[in-house]
Amino acid sequence: MSMKATMIIDKDFKVGEVDARLYGSFIEHLGRAVYGGIYEPGHPQADEQGFRGDVLELVKALQVPIVRYPGGNFVSGYNWEDGIGPLSERKRRLDLAWRTIEPNLIGLNEFMDWCRKANTDAMMAVNLGTRGPDEARDIIEYSNITGGTYWSDLRISHGYRTPHNIKTWCLGNEMDGPWQTGSKTAVEYGRAACETAKVMKWVDPSIELVACGSSSLTMPTFPDWEATVLEHTYDHVDYISLHQYYGNRDQDSANFLAQSVGMDQFIHTVISTADFVQAKKRGKKKIHLSFDEWNVWYHSNDADRQIEPWSIAPPQLEDIYNHEDALLVGCMLISMLKRADRVKMACLAQLVNVIAPIMTANGGAAWKQTIYYPYLHASVFGRGTVLVPLIKSPKYDAKDYTDVPYLEAVAVHNEETSELTIFAVNRHLEEALPLEMDLRSFGAFEIKEHIVLESDDLKASNTLEAPDRVKPHSAGNANAAANGQISAHLGKASWNVIRLKLV
Image (cartoon, rainbow, N blue to C red):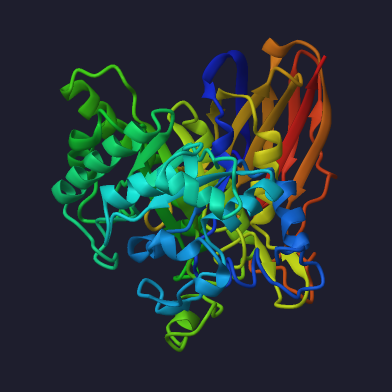
């Protein structure tokens, strides 16, 4: 087998435009995401509202365009009214989703304040587990109507004269999951989502709505669920959601890094199902995809089983990520970029402390996990038009996947900045991968930077004590040759960002 890969990129072979919301994230009332994560009154870097400034700076550096809130499983039993009004009047509630106590110190208004400070928008979820259209029409009236009605005037009385104008809404969460409060069959959910969507758009026709897809590609309901739900909701919604997490419980790193191949297939199946419903209804509207939960999640499973129930903000789902996790996150970002024509929104789940790129110590420092870096690079440099890469790569067979290319790559052309960025992962665990790239259609260019995230230890992670054990460098070896050719050696098990300035 020849260990060499080639890639041809032509500026006219386009996949589609990247919607900035592809680089969204997620804050749920779960574990220390809110309390001890974004919000910690008394912390040395807390602002006048109790929001941690060090966390805000790390979030702003990621240029996160949208954040899903308040769940997640939490939303299916949540009464949003508990989180508004004077703090002294807010109720402590049992959260059945995560078996904790929710103090409701942070609610809709405070979260919107945080979004403004973080330079991001909200993707708000409504409760379709224990509630339905009535609650949904109230929360959107409270959030988006200027004034002169009960709920909008109540918001004004709470100190928010200007409407929040939340434009993206999720119709519930994972409603096919038996773990979900008020879970439903596809028909039950489809009908509820349809009627909820109708009243929400009657209140504010400018909003976009996300219907729940299956909770993961392994659900027995997938993909019949998507077909049935869209049969009921096609005329009223704009997106169908996808959720998927991966893990390496068997410590089979080659198979672990191949899992984004399954993500490619998942995306393809959902697109096919959405297009089937469109064809069946003779519709003109394309249903786009919102991959609003995705990440690696498995490290914390055993610890979570030992948490005492009915505490406030225990350390739940606190995966400590290693180098190979960052590589798979990079591959997953590439998977979504390869279908940027249809995957328009996505949320790395989650943002702080809970299966997150950012970790904090209560009362102490915040630091970047390994997965922070591919997410940062894609968000900052992956804006523009995705191009079709013609790739030839040596391949391998893993336990669950065959013909897995060692090279996983995509290119994004930003015409406004005259830049081309190539994201590439070498999945080979032992050998560097020589890569030859043909970019002759772009004319003259210069290499600005070749960023590399690599480690001799796949299990190396960043911690409070060693926050920089795994971090990228800019000493990559990409070289420009004549006639629009570039050569590079991609180190073993590495994430690479090759940035070009077009001249």
